Amino acid sequence: MAEVGIFVGTMYGNSLLVAEEAEAILSGLGHKATVFEDPEVKDWESYTGKYVLVVTSTTGQGDLPDSIVPLYEGIKDMYQPHLRYGIIALGDSTYANFCGGGKTFDACCRNRARDVSARCSPSTPAKTRNRKAFPILG
Ligand SMILES: Cc1cc2nc3c(=O)[nH]c(=O)nc-3n(C[C@H](O)[C@H](O)[C@H](O)COP(=O)(O)O)c2cc1C
Image (tube, rainbow, N blue to C red; front, side, top):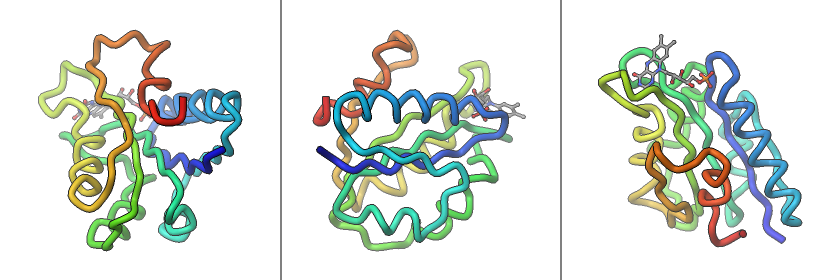
């Protein structure tokens, strides 16, 4: 059993729906998953040594939604050698900066963490995306 914190960045709720689906799938697999809708640094820190899953959309011109900016700003310079994370990035491929918000968060975590997710192309069927995001748990 793993403990997974699911951190949401959303404008209109799509990412929250995806996060809740991920929570249900992880719970169904016997893991303890918790969704943070307005995530704070202290929530993130409480998952040190556990797993974090970021589910975020993109707004503006490749920007993170306001709801997750405080978390991003709070952790971006943090030393997190034991971080185990995954990202589910929502976006719209008609925009120039497709999934820019998720890519920004990914870049922030990647060099200091162990990425446990599998990268999926936008053509990956939606049904299998969440399962692919955490292969080591499935
Ligand atoms: C004003 C606005 C700007 C957007 N900018 C981008 C963008 O730069 N890149 C992208 O991939 N998607 C962009 N999107 C698409 C959203 O990320 C996409 O619709 C997503 O599903 C919204 O999810 P949410 O409800 O969780 O925020 C934009 C949407 C809006 C309304």
